[in-house]
Amino acid sequence: MTDFADKARAAAEAMRALFPATPLLRNAFLSERYGADIWLKREDLSPVRSYKIRGAFNAMTKRLAEDPERTLFVCASAGNHAQGVAFVCRHFGVRGSIFMPVTTPRQKIDKTRAFGGDAIDIHLVGDYFDDTLAAAQDYCKASGGAFLSPFDDPDVMEGQASVAVEMMEQLGYAPDRLILPVGGGGLSSGILSYLKAEGVGTRVKLVEPLGGASLAAALKAGHPVTLPTVDNFVDGAAVARIGAAPFEVLASTDPGDVLAAPENRICVTISEMLNVEGIVLEPAGALAIDALQDLGAALRGQTVVCVTSGGNFDFERLPEVKERAMRFQGLKKYFILRLPQRPGALKDFLGLLGPGDDIARFEYLKKSARNFGSVLIGIEAREAGDFDALFTRMEQRGFAYRDITDDEVLAQFLI
Image 1 (cartoon, helix red, strand yellow):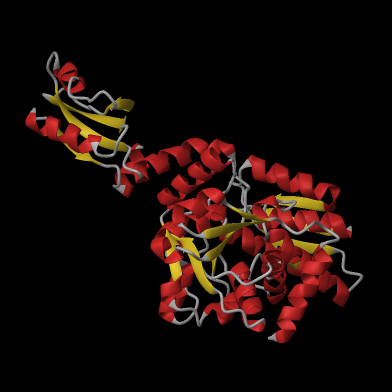
Image 2 (cartoon, rainbow, N blue to C red):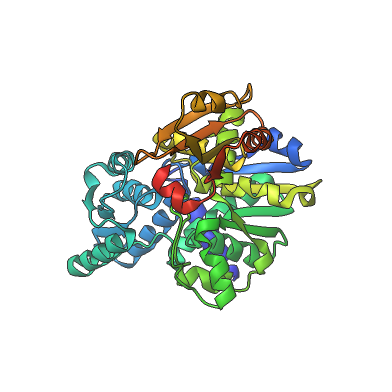
């Protein structure tokens, strides 16, 4: 394992030709909240605004050392890995063929092209990532290129471990706790391998999105398994199956050290870090900070490092983030109201609203001329408790309703 630490340090040193070490910054806001000394390892401030550039650089360096005549690298990604590969291809002056789903937002495609310039080709293939990956691997075999996995590759894991190398040098000592996001497992397995090789006793918590808890599922089964469904909101970490190579390292993890962050709660963290601290984080980049609240009082008096893994946030998603955050906080609810079809019925209902209740959505769902009609209503409140009072008033006045805020099926079709 000492060999791994040496390789991780060598990778970190080699990266200085590409970019300076990302900052390790103490965050006074979070430190005061939790009564701890909380530091953020700002991978969102790398040249491609994520740590993915590290694994791509190290893996490409190794491939070129093995075969200096190699000129083509291939990857499949809809986000950060694509941008990292594009940047490194341009640095080394080699060709990159990057496969992305047809559904990839234009912003991500444009950023990938900006980082790679003339060094890369972008292929839009498939509606889903599995289709994109299959196309990339087929192309790689046919063209004789080198495939660069986003996480399931020992060289990528080694490159991601450079995050820990920098952290230890910058802090000057081992933190009491380290909180890491988990997607495919490349970052977490690389860092854990480095800490073990160095004999560091830091307690590590791993955090994955609730709707993509592939590590927890693998630990329960004893081997990597494919999740039947995945919530893709945390797109940088919502992986259906943990990588095989990373799981060899992560298999000994105590399941109690793996936390699951609800997607809507992550939205609260994103909004808070943006509004209070001016820090722009993508959903995956907010995972480690979001998990602090799960640890709470256990953090008091400790030195804690959170890895903010990425800041590639598309601001077109901001309305969705605000919406989901308010729903998690209980400040916004949707319900279907059974409204009598008589003059004054709507006025009667509006008279029940409190001074802080704001109608954000109002849509008649009536399909026939019956005595009652259905109305879809979205209301924002100043305090979560305001809804209890509103619903009590509605029930007292005989208004029938159904709260569908947390009904995933109805919400998907109606909201």
